[in-house]
Length: 123
Length: 126
Length: 157
Image (tube, rainbow over all chains, first blue to last red; front, side):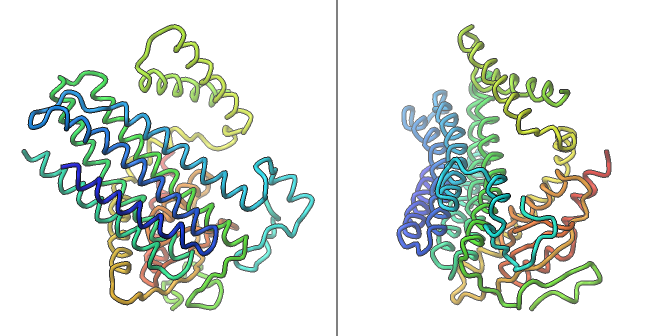
């Protein structure tokens, strides 16, 4: 029963990897890697149940592997923090960047998406 | 058993939608439209799959006489879903803004920003 | 201070539930990390926002409706993906956010982003910039239905 989810997630991963390789911008790659990470979280969850199923085929199972879900929890967090960290690095060139301090020094650092000026200023 | 049938349907739904989401980020023409496709995998892909797994975890918990550890698996799966649903829009928003700031070209059908101040729905751009 | 205490209790509860261990060593480590997170939250001044816990409880009534919206929107975008020829008409629109609290605005903006087909870009002067994938998705946000529902969440306080 779990194979259908496993196959679906694996295909998702392949397609996401294809976009990560194709690019063209670095943001496309980060987006693809983010999706790959989500798929990984799901795959870990599904794998926990699947591997529990295989040990006692046919019967109601007492030993699936709930500890896999803990790993998925941690991976979900790592994935998010990783994406944000990579984004920050791409944008500022370092992870120790302080947004507030830089804004005071350089008001032109932020390009406004709509071309409007924010009356309250950045931050 | 009806739980198994329901799980099947949920897992299949999740698998199909996450593949569609991944196909979307391959097919859509530019970065900004691709972020929308990624949203499908994060919501309709992850949600049904985790729901299906929660049903199975419930079945296992029933077999284990609702012991604390077996019930906790359901809660943890729910937490995985909550994390994905909380972090996905945040990451998507951050990506979108970072791409804007980096000057990735955005293509829209309309000219710039349309204003909507609540007087009827006539000024929908298009 | 009240925020920090509530947060600490919640963190300890989460630790006890998730770890399932009762050894003194692990309990001490857990207490330590809970204290650390509480201190970090205090340093980030999370508590300057309105009471988030009651709001989170009230949000429960909003989730079923949001889930249904997400399902509908996901099906719409999926149709676009599998259609033979792509008929996208991306656009940026500006919708009012009538929430009076920051947390209400955050919930509204995140709800917009969570719904496939629309992503919130920016929030300023009580309005949210939304990037919509199609005309239909844009019209869906412009009805203001979601906005009203999120605002209703905070008014019941």
